[in-house]
Length: 338
Ligand SMILES: [Zn+2]
Image (spheres, rainbow, N blue to C red):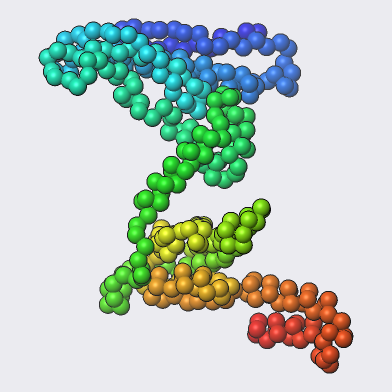
């Protein structure tokens, strides 16, 4: 069996039709592995359809631009240029006519390229979106492999481009973030009384960790502290955030915006959790007037576990005491819990 796949392009008025074959599929006797489309065929189909569709769109657009906007005179063709445009379904080489401007108006240049003017960015937004989405979730190399595996873009994307695009987006998000200020509590108790009844408390947990330079040139250089956190609403929906402590110029603004995006009102309670580290505590204050600051149990028990491990390594001679240290540590834990 042979299947031919064609597209039929109709003009808006239905007076002309273009039929174009974009793919042929052959099938022998039905086997489990040849039922329906295979991934490779689906990729070829998408790529061919994308080329045919884009070609028609560019041809129609170019034709519409051939008349002067002011006097409707037909514009003269100068030449054709090829524009490379990257999409989810393959790189397009678009043949775009360059036209001479109409002499009826003064123009800074003699000619122009309508399609090139329409597409100042040479990568489609959907491709940028997927590249950036996966690039922010996993390594750039893996993102390239994953996208090439499922989309017809073999050899058309690379780690450098993903990295550069992701950095551009990162800078844009940073620029959109408001200024850092001393406190984020807005209004006064009388204003807060007039606010609608707030949701149940938000819970925001934060923790820090050091990332050390592997070649350890010096203790201070190459090491940096990352602070990450998670804000959880009463219904369980959560948002994460993170920053590099010594580098971040707006750490509190970042946390405040996360809370605000989760609907925090000034009359709503927020429970801040931390391990008691001063830097983290400083970031948690002046964000909400009804804040409650708690040391979280996980961090307390983690420290006790470390101490218990140390205690196991102590010999009787080391301690020179009559106390059973592991037992005492266990008791501390229970006192704290109760
Ligand atoms: Zn004109």
